[in-house]
Length: 561
Image (cartoon, rainbow, N blue to C red):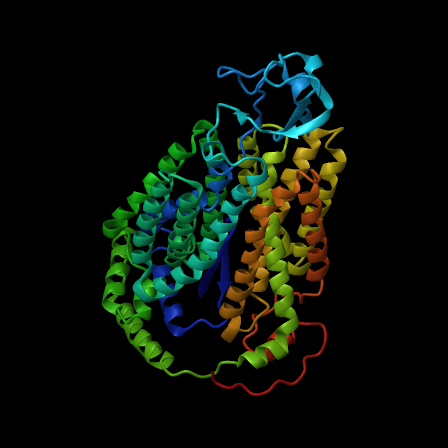
């Protein structure tokens, strides 16, 4: 059975359960009979594209709403109310920094010149002495973000990076909370309520009167809306037959990447952060139509002993797909589900935490670091794409497009050379590309940008492989918990990634080298993972340990927790 873990940075995490229950086998048999990917499933998928696209927008829109705006010091002796960001007098009043006018300093007046009577002449400025901006700033007029509206410049720019960190803290809180609520109250209910609350939070953020209210709504938005993607992904796949499940999952992943690419073009067209938020969040109100059009999760209904509702949905699927479905199959499904629910009420057969740590402690630590590195690099590359040559909007869109070949690349190579070598190869390639970017930037800027995009492609491919890989190295009884734990530790990487642009004023390529350092360590560390290609999923700790090349040690007997 497919179990969905929290989504990280645009790619769904799918865990494959090691033991398929009788109910799952019967349900899959029914799905095969009533159509594995018929008209009903296609309609269902199109509806669920709404929360998938919304989540792609909302999880990273801060890269535009909270981005820095090109600015420079206001020169009292030269600037007027009508002057613009660029002017001829800047050649002798303002130094250049990284190919643009310095944003926070300008040349001081010569000591013998009085400020009040100084004219805008080159001879009046001492180009050997720099002072900080004291008379305000002149901005690029074609873009409005919270930086320009709330006056976040120079020493306060850490506030812009903090928006991304708070966004990911909201996801850290919202994903497990949403998973619990979805299990308790239903997937459909969570999508409707989460979508509507996210719309209200985003629209309220577009009216934020100051920075801290904006930050509060950013957190609230992700706390209530970050679960949209994993819930929608699971609902889109659960009524798809086994034959088409991989294709459907890949299609959803590609949809997410295309949505991110579209966000770049949309932000380029709408350069006012308040208007952009309203355009992005108003469609989320359409989640209300799910009340009438979207069926509840069949598997959730069965888990809640609501067999009659599940059977009605399956009858509707058969009717829409123009397939036949016998009542005897539905009756057998209902009978086996009731037996399964009754059996699951009795606990037992679980490993204790001490046993798990003793047997797989090193593997869990490896997994946590690898997850941290992947989220850190994947999000960091997208955020720092604005520093590349050319339009930051087009660069960001290209990063979204690069997720498409990255996902397809991973699907191909991990079956050809194995999970472990595929994961190492992708991360090592990403590291090499990142190291080559600064080496070629001055002489070959276009080639340097291409290599940066290649780094994004290979990091995406590495991430896809990691999803499969880490779902295959843990035993069945604790696979879901350990995979969730590794992915939640990895979330700290995405919290740290928005802070990396703060390193650029100290050294332009500091983020590149930091990503490359973590990537190199990660690539080496993955070589110590066991290979899982063409091996049965482990069901016990003993089997999980036997995946290693070393002989497993005896384990204590299982005990209930």
